[in-house]
Image (cartoon, rainbow, N blue to C red; front, side):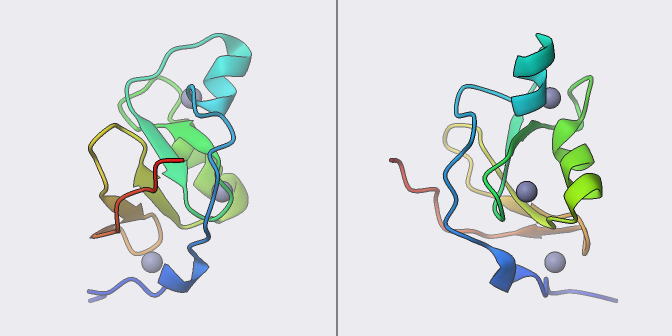
Length: 94
Ligand SMILES: [Zn+2]
Ligand SMILES: [Zn+2]
Ligand SMILES: [Zn+2]
C-alpha cells in the first residue's frame, strides 16, 4: 500500500489563474462550494462538494496530480493519484 506521495517534485511555484474563483464556474456563471488550486499550473477549480467538481475534472483532463486548498487559512494538499492528504507549506500571499 502506498503511504507516500511520489509526485511532490511536480509542485511548481504557481500563480492562481483566477484568484476570484473557479475558472470554469466563472466562465459559465456557476457557483462553487470550496476552491482548490492546482500546484502544477495554477488552475483554480471547485471541490467535490461543488456542482461541477472542476478541480477533479482538471486532474482527469491534465493529469496534474497535486492540488492545495485555496480556502483562507487552509494549507492542506491532496494527491489525486495516490489519494493521500499532504502537509504542504502555507501558500505565499502575494
Ligand atoms: Zn502523489
Ligand atoms: Zn467550478
Ligand atoms: Zn493543473
